[in-house]
Image 1 (cartoon, helix red, strand yellow):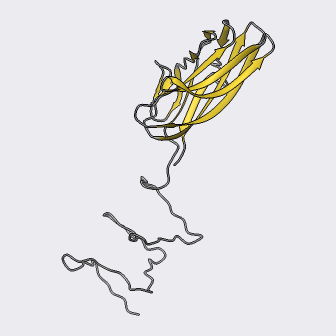
Image 2 (image 1 turned 135 degrees about the vertical axis):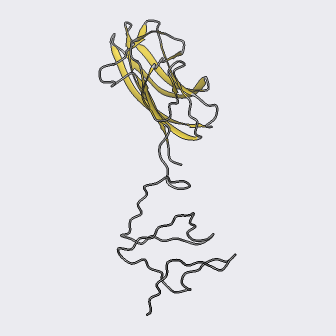
Image 3 (image 1 turned 30 degrees about the vertical axis):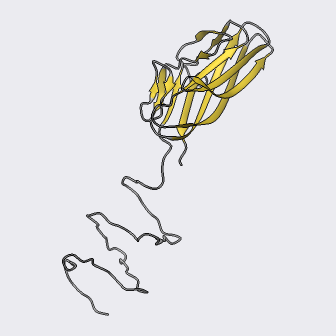
Length: 211
């Protein structure tokens, strides 16, 4: 086996440089580094690139076309008790962002406006107080101003607080869809209570699933 010492390999003008032949293996020895300064295409259409067991791919750059992440995601909350919840559907006025990866939660209109199409998971935790026993509490996910999902319906037989957590999934088109949380009760004197101390209730959160 001979050794060729060169500083640069160039193909003939207008041609491609090929390393190795069918059945050969081209190896980069331990301790050597391959620096690819330009754009690189690995494989060809219909071909398979195999990473053997025990090998590691490390990505410190930007990935496109594979993998994914759960953005956008958000969490918004109430900072004070919201009164006047009655038999009509009432929007929960989440007025503060806790987490907002893409700055998409509108605290003025209390809604989430995803700009990426896909399927989203939504969760809300509410704590309501009614001075009337046998009160039905219902929570909805609204999409574009209409009921998308009845997330939970619960009944409290006591004159007390009632807390619930509920989750659902919904699709978004990534351009004009928006999502809100609405509640109603079976009488006219309930409050949605906030928990500004540890944020264990009175919030609305969601994230996009990786397609």
